[in-house]
Length: 370
Image 1 (cartoon, one colour):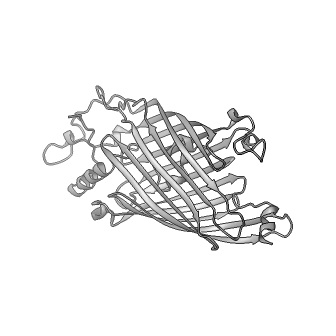
Image 2 (image 1 turned 60 degrees about the vertical axis):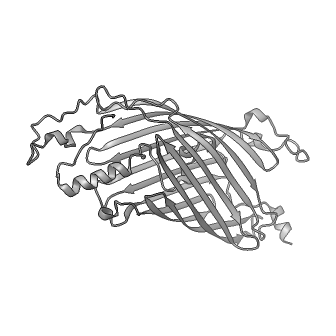
Image 3 (image 1 turned 180 degrees about the horizontal axis):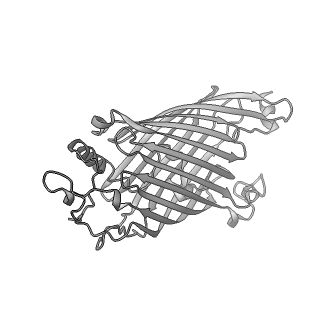
């Protein structure tokens, strides 16, 4: 049986140990950084999603978790993705189905940064990800992408703020007693690698008023291909197990209405543990007709709900206006930890910018309405 690093907060009490135990068990899978709004961190779901939907995409995200139970877990990140030579993605001949300009140049790239701080010992994870994806047309409306990701990860832990079981003399805590643990490092860095494939499909509405568009992404990815060693303790043989991810997201317009449905799912499996999230957002579109530019612009408001297996109900809201979007989510804890959390999981917020404007329609779309 592998040795576990068990630590307790300095203000030790039996309830605190019980809460810590539940946190340890329920978080055994969360060695990786993850967000409830996983569709807003595409390169963390699958490197093949890098630049899949926009010529340029930039976003920031922040999550605060377990503030009602212990020292809050704070996770934040930023990402930037873009297509290389976007004009080369256009068809060379509109009369031909699959004739594109310089097919080998349909590449995308991205860089992202994420950081996490957790618990009394400020256990931290910081990582920089470099992603690259290549897209291959399958049909007039679909494409297949293959993505690779290389990361540099730093993990930290402040042992001075931790209390170990061996430091209890039977009746009370004694900081002069040896911890019984052989700390190898409070700071180490390692490389990490990931890869994935994704199939994208999409067709836009023939007329703005019809709202019959459909978009889909379905893919699979693998993270920690090299299974990097985790070495807080001397002699530790712990490795970060490979993680396998299956995912999908869809956007389905309800014909002749202002409403669209956006169901999605994510399934992740790692060393016998699993995380399964499924849910749906309902979007309502507001239409605005510009008299000066010949464009029809839209903004949207969305409300959604999702469920993470044996853990939380996730409520979310989204506002999209032109190239900008702001989203908010809140985890309502449903696991055994509700005894301590009283359902309070934590809030999450993101801001996103994309180009081109996803709600921009050329003048020809206006002709369809006449």
